[in-house]
Length: 249
Length: 230
Ligand SMILES: [Fe+2]
Ligand SMILES: [Fe+2]
Image 1 (cartoon, rainbow over the protein chains, first blue to last red):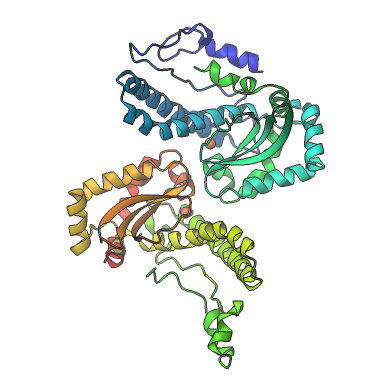
Image 2 (cartoon, each protein chain N blue to C red):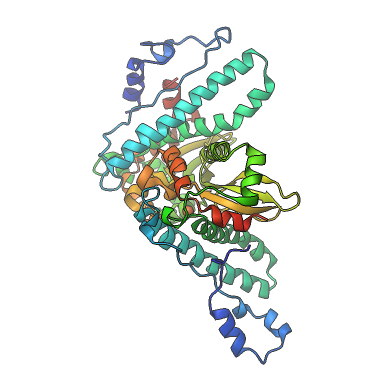
């Protein structure tokens, strides 16, 4: 799945280098004040593929509008940043940081999110597609039900907009699993942290279908978690998890 | 907080009446004396702000979202009162973010309903008197102020509110954004607030939030804002 997605990006026209493949792109130079431009990764399934758990209307707006807006704003901020670096304008560089974190976070989070969802009828949506991860989950939380209960409680405790993630934390040779929540679009990019899967708890992620009933959204999201992707991220490195982002530069 | 909507239920006076023989000092330590927060009635119909804000949004926003803040605030208030009674300082501190969030949600929405009005009841009519003068002095014109306010709304990263506030020390006006349900307390007095949580506009405007920011000025109740401004 991931290999195919990466290939697809090579055929997408890139804003600053039409028709070139990401891997062939030259590092940008400050001389012409160009900056990397990110593009919207295609969804690995159709907009209606997650129904009835997430409606096609939600998916279309979420991917085509919300995710695209983060990318558009990120690209604009990166361009302004490149200019500010070129002109040694340090105050502008600093003032851009929060906007870059927010919009880059939005791009990172949603890119990971689309990949860690799958149609409920697919084999990828069964926990049997993640045997090693499941072992570690059971060792940590006792059983699958207790883990889900803890994850749901974390999601529902978020005050405002944010995300819930299952994260692999590597400290030296040890690795442990943790459920964490992040506010707004803060991405999971801490040292040694590998995001395994995330759940978007912004209201736009469920409101058209679930209204204020976010507990029902949290219940239903389990039907469309892509455990195959989760297993891959669990077994892989940080760089592997963020592969999709590199491909879209 | 001089909002007439932020009232407490009849429980308080009832409790006081039945406990009238108990000394004042005794009352202060009794948790049951606290009044419960209640959902204020909207001062207009759910559909009264259409087409700026749909009736469906208003109904969900008031009956479901606001009411959840009210009931949760009451729950956590009970818990913090219990913790106080047991002198459990750690529990009191742990509960503070819940009081801030749900109490803030209650205060913010109560003020918000008041600072909106259907056009038939003066919604959208420009401010007059001292507030009008202060806005012109600070921002040049009402339109220039709205532009700045909308830019602040658009700049909220995540859920939150934008407020026109008055500095209680200097009396000057400011536009300030607050995250999530952080209420306007302390140094600033709320004059006018706009909810920019997605639930406030999503059913009608989806991702086109700039259209919501533009439309809401047609139902802003400047009379309510004038009463808050000192
Ligand atoms: Fe989202
Ligand atoms: Fe609200």
